[in-house]
Amino acid sequence: MVKRTVGPKKLTPEVRQWLAEMVAEARQLVYGEAGCPAWKTLFALIEDDAKEVGHEFIRLLMEQTAKEHAAALPAEELVTDREEAARLIDPEERTLETESGPVSWNEPQAYLPKSRKAFFPSVEGAGAGR
Image 1 (spheres, rainbow, N blue to C red):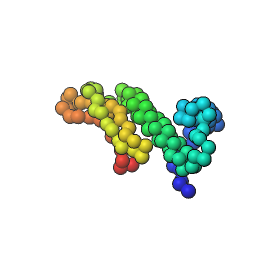
Image 2 (cartoon, rainbow, N blue to C red):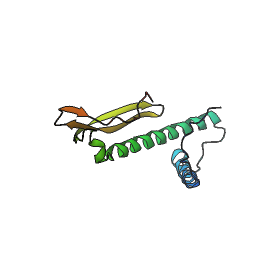
Image 3 (spheres, helix red, strand yellow):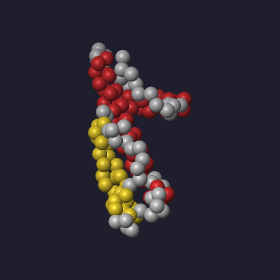
Image 4 (cartoon, one colour):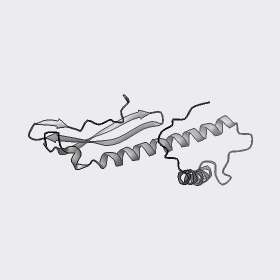
């Protein structure tokens, strides 16, 4: 059996209920009005359909979250320990290849005018090295 990744408890009863409702709607979109495939469809094919929908859900959740996270950069994160304030410049598009497909977002970039250096605060990131 495949072990699912365990992290912070985000799967509250409310989230589970919403997912159940969303799945009921998704089944109709995937299989039509019946909400299920034709009789005698192999379970492996039902599993393939579920994985295709699930991976796209996962990919979209990661991509939208990464975009919002990058856009929410607090101003205080742009100040160095020497009190120099960085100026935001054009963001750089980043794409990570994940198990669920490519995830892209615009990563903030900044410049320290006084030091004449590129600047981005050193924080634990979403990169493959984690």
